[in-house]
Length: 235
Image 1 (tube, rainbow, N blue to C red):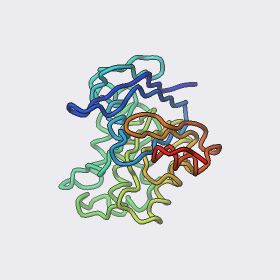
Image 2 (image 1 turned 120 degrees about the vertical axis):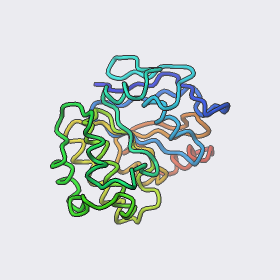
Image 3 (image 1 turned 60 degrees about the vertical axis):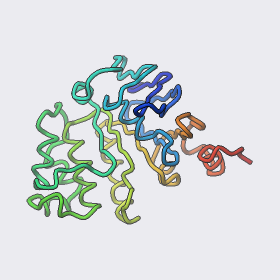
């Protein structure tokens, strides 16, 4: 069953066109990776899905409902949540206060404070610490948990591994197996192409705002990813 569909989506960043006729789909419970170099349009596409950046042309359809042009708060209430690049926590609030911000207008579902503390046990130990004083890895766990506490149907994750040590990245990505068991679908924007392929069911590559490669992640060779990433011809 298809949860999200993008149809010929054009998105502009100010006066510059960021994506060109992007077609993309996400199935129920599926993990889809979007890869590409800096400036390829990956983050802009996520912002368009959740309504933070307007779609100039095309449609965004969530579970059969056209959500193109809806305000981001209404899209969030429909079950879409964003884990933004840079985490965007409230540094002067505690970890638990940040989490409660996500839970404030939550949809019914399995994700509660107890559930996210079980997912990330280390977070319980720092729940009364100021979020601004945490390490990058701890902050990323809080950011993911805050989004989960809205009980989304679709979780958008933007550059989770940015600036983090490999061991921390592995720990964070391991949690997605548990998240998907609750029926949550994922879109993962990631520059680490190997990690993106390994943790996803399907993969899209963007180059200058256009899809240059798509398919089942397990069937895509790294030389094909390299060619699509840099605009080369695969051997």
